[in-house]
Image (cartoon, rainbow, N blue to C red; front, top):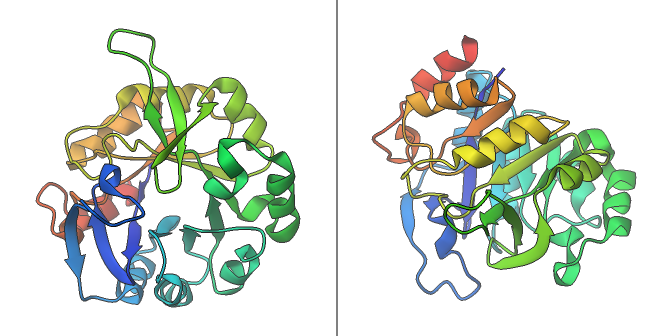
Length: 258
């Protein structure tokens, strides 16, 4: 059944909410919706207290390792971590308390899918501890049948790998869950990509979490309805925890309790 998934997005070691499409290597033009002096561990302890599992600690760029590990140690087994994960460092995050590591860019070197890298990750941490982030951008024109291509390198690089039933089926053999940010609408609180949510519900053979554009508690109910309860939802910028006006964290906790 559809659940609310919390997040702890880290940028320069701080908990922030950022408009996804503004991320780039230079930092020029970065749009930040929210920044707080509260520690990542504070948020992790809150999620632990409320028994909200499967949240995502996302390291957006460099300088976030210590902050991420502080959150993981505050809620062992309750959080997933992503951002710069490779086969060389994945196990240290599991050892630090992560339930799963979240990986995208590393398995697509130079924009090409490298199955040997994915197999190495499975060897290191096990399929049961791996989430593949298939964050994407819509590449179909208005009026066309919707389709999306995977976006890597903090959503800056669009690659020639499309989100299809075949792609989902192939990759599901190597991981426990999918995390899919709709990068076009991430952080904008202007509505979700319903077509993508429906597509994940229809074609993902493993649990999938959607992120991007949620702005009210009704969006949680909407995702439950249009996905048949098969897709979870991450809410970030709209949440009152992160300065948002649209969704109360306490209401999300109640939603998860059913």
